[in-house]
Amino acid sequence: MSSLPNSPPSIPPVIIATFHEKDKGTFLKYDAKMRYAFVSAIETIFGKVVQAVVKPGGDYFIYPHNQKQKDELLTKLAKVGDLDVTCSKTKAETEFKGIIKGVSINEDLSFLMELLAPQAVTEIRRMQKVLVDGTKQDTTWLNVTFSRPLPYSVLIAGTCHLVSKYT
Image (cartoon, rainbow, N blue to C red; front, side):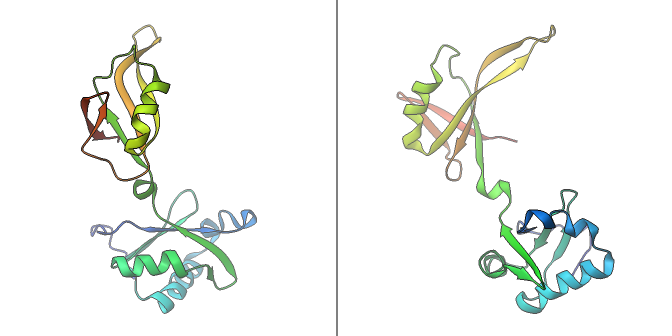
């Protein structure tokens, strides 16, 4: 296992969490020897990984060497030793959020949702800015969630709006 902090992994990690609520935070309680043994057990089955990091929330982020190794971890890893685990992708891989600009503040969001739903939009929220006095004011920007990777643009009643990644 490589743990060089200056060599960023090129493939997003597999997130490993404990399956049972009673085990939540277990990885944070592991000493160095237990963490090493946990990762070694995974590497024995799936091969060496690029990096393994316990995040402050208590989940393990396992950075695979390639997509095949990642897919195997996601589909086949359910137990390490006596510990039941779940594996998932990162939010960046599963939540597709974007911004579209120039949508009049007079537009009804529920009507806009009807127009955007066929374009894989699952949720829209109008963005607001905070004024000097602390009050909030609607803007012409919409925060848009998609069920698939972001498209280049969306159509709203014949008007094209470019989609920017929400960061």
